[in-house]
Length: 160
Image 1 (cartoon, one colour):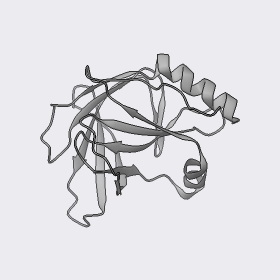
Image 2 (cartoon, rainbow, N blue to C red):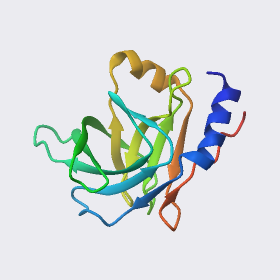
Image 3 (cartoon, rainbow, N blue to C red):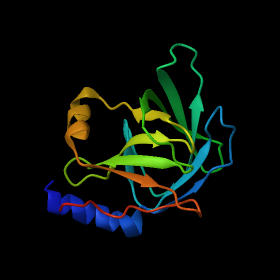
């Protein structure tokens, strides 16, 4: 996908991927967060359709550097996915949920790369299969933060 096409996808996300992020559904220990997507988003192993999902960290007790994230439906009654993530860091904490998306595979939806809970310097890097990982690492990425209302909007990529 060319830079111009990716910019178009990101611009479309300005209107389509906007989401609502609720910060107070879980404790800080489990980092429970509700995220609403208006268009499909890729996660390892599948694509989440438009809608609301509850993301929560599960303590697997095996390693402090590996976390499991469970994604539930909006009413927390069905597990949609359990995904292994690695700890990732950033320099500045934000008081908002921050998601990083990577350009999707050929004409595919954007791939969710990282998720940072509000106020945390450590986040969760979603681990994709090796065949997809190289593409995601090399793809353009954009970080999206929730605004004061908890809404997430993608605003495009500079330097197009």
